[in-house]
Length: 128
Image (cartoon, rainbow, N blue to C red; front, side):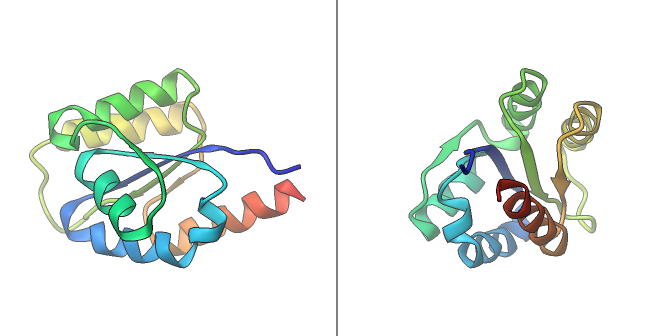
């Protein structure tokens, strides 16, 4: 039996279109899971895909910290975070804290489409 898992979707401004494209290409697989994300990302993904995505605050306004807290409370099982390595982020300490907590709590984390693809393949194989 397939188990719904909780997947957080986050993307910096310059990577939001990449995340939306990735979600669209995996819409069927993602539709059986519980999706959440930071402010603008969750809204844009939901609008572009028709999938239900629970929205937290915008990343710079505390959304990264909210998702980090949800990871610490074991409410998020997987993190898809397409971050922008070429642009300085004003909330960089929050981003680093989120990535740190994901590693600390040992949840699968993808920062690009290739790794996110592999995580979904592994998830599908685990569900068989």
